[in-house]
Every structure is written in structure tokens, then in C-alpha cells.
Image 1 (cartoon, rainbow, N blue to C red):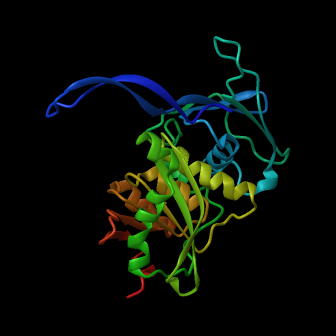
Image 2: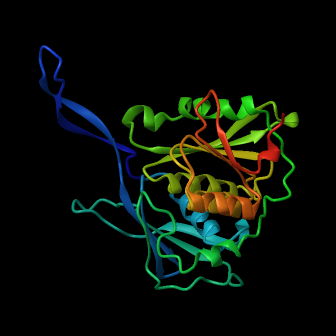
Length: 280
């Protein structure tokens, strides 16, 4: 598998120091392309941090509405691909779908960068209509103190961020009875926040855990439309972010029954949709 990080020489400037310029090594998060193939046909290319690539592909297919249960993906494997030194790059994954699965339109050139989600998807409306795991009727309830404490717990578990400072994270928490406790069951890191979420959703799909009822998805960064869509497609009832949501994210959260939390910083947060899941 590819490396998650790499060391690079840099020149460091510290202007208020006795020695303002010096050479040192820094650790960078790796970003490489991953091509997703359905059968022999290319379906999408995304920029990601290598690792958990089968989860990433599975989660992406859930988010696109292609699959929603583990048996619909018959197999996943790395295809041949070499770098300039003749080493396997592990940058092409081929997914074989079950024969009865309706394959998506191939050739629409879905390209996703590490900062965007479903760029190239034909219609937002089609995404809104394609969910199989609605979180709307999920009766999970949470104490505000529990929600406020999740960002710190996510940060504590971010090993790659600790080394590089350059990746996003998504952590799935299983809420205990009464909404007073939560267990971190899956954490994924990636240069793209949408990739981190896809890796969590794909992990759950391959483990046969969808829909993810009674859970909270805590993410670093902001809450975009794509992240709400991914949470809704996986049946996740609560999405919490440390930064702001977009207007379209709030609209989709209201429509799909996702509780959307923003600006969760430890001492408080805003609830933009689904406040009834928060206990008084």
C-alpha cells in the first residue's frame, strides 16, 4: 500500500528567533489519485490519502446511490499500475457489482478533488431521491454535553493529523442508552473531508452495519451539502462539524431528517436542523 505520509526538506523562517532561517524536515500527508472502475470501465477519479481504499470505494458507491447493502459489491481489487520506478502504485481499484445491481451511467467523467465531494453528479435532485436508509425516524437522543465533547475526542484519535497537521477526520460514535455516552467505533483520516466520510461509510457497508442508526458522525472542518448527503445515504441521524454548514447542507438536513450541528467547539454549538434530538 502507498505511504500515508512522507518527509520533505523545508527551509523554516522564524522571524523573532536568534536564528531566523534554518533547514529542517517536515512530514506531509500524501495525496494521490485513485481511479474507481466498475468492472472494466472507469467510473471516477478522486484525490485521496492512500489507505482504506476499498472502504473509500464502497462508501463512494453508497453516497452515489449505486449500492446500499454489502452483497451488492461482489469484489474489490487493485489493478495494475506502476510509477516511474516500476513500483505498484495501488491507485486503481476495480469493483465488481452483483449482476442485478443497476450500474450507473459510465463515462460522465466524475472527478472529485480532495476538497469537493460529488463534482460532476448530474442533478442534486437525483441525489435527494436516491436514499435507501432514511434517518428521519431514528429516535436517538443526546445530551448537549456529549455532543460538545466529541470534537476533542476526535482530535485525540487523529494519529495522522498529529504527524502532518494536514488531514481531515471523520469519526463515527455509537450513542449509548439515554444519550449520555458515546463510543468511537470508526475513525478515518484523509486529505479530503468527503473521502474520510466515505471511508467510514464504506467500512460500515462492508461490515454489514448499514443503516447506521443511533450514531453521530463528527467531522473536522465545515459541513457541506456532500457530507449531509453521505450521512443521510448511510442512515446516520446526527452530523456534527467543528465549522459552519452551507445553506444547501441545512436544507438537505431538514429534508432528509438529519440533525445538523455546526461550530461544535467544546463549550457550545449551533443546531441548524433536527434540534429535537437534543435532550433538554
